[in-house]
Length: 314
View (tube, one colour):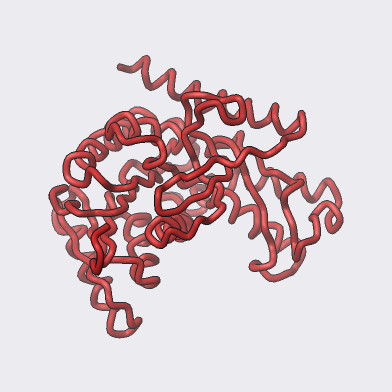
């Protein structure tokens, strides 16, 4: 990024998630923002609406919207939120073919207009869409990452805090694996005020929280009826944008491309990484118990199955 230049953030998709991500990024003054969408007037209108909040909220960044991917020129980070949202009864995998086409097209445009950008993927099925973006951009693996583990972990943290009746800020937790119903909340790494939750809650309550975490996205889809979550996903991806643009070296659980780590190769899956100015700077390998390892492998197998289905479709 050039010296004395504000960072530039591109967001592909001006729906609820994209617009909310823009909102969080603007409020935190992470950089100038451009919203991209194929619907005429949508990104322009939402960008103008958000920009008009600047005098009240005291943020000094520029927010614009466009239907032309050329507006991504000079972007340091591009977030892909475009795609079809889930409806009640649908799994993330049901979106496979449709969203693959959308993400592939967007990724090709990113490579053309923002060849030096870091790409963060939110479109579902998340881990598979990360592979689509990696292959379509041709970028190195450290520059393509998916937002899943932060969202899944914050849901787990929320449910733990509510169960214990304690502050949300005092709960830490980690969720590995694919962004689907086979995700792996790591109970051993869940703490409230530094105390393992296994010392604070009975096993049956912990099991219920784990199951609710796995179904967390679907719970919101069932309640909304006509859309999926956007506040927490937007907040989670904003944390990733900040880590990259500000070179924060955060330890965050993200969907990273695995090339032998955890015994997996050629897929994206949620693992703890160091996220900084060079994107995914390191994958942190945890020592898993046999039960955790098997659960992680089952989750990765689900990701691999989605990839095989997608490739069979041509």
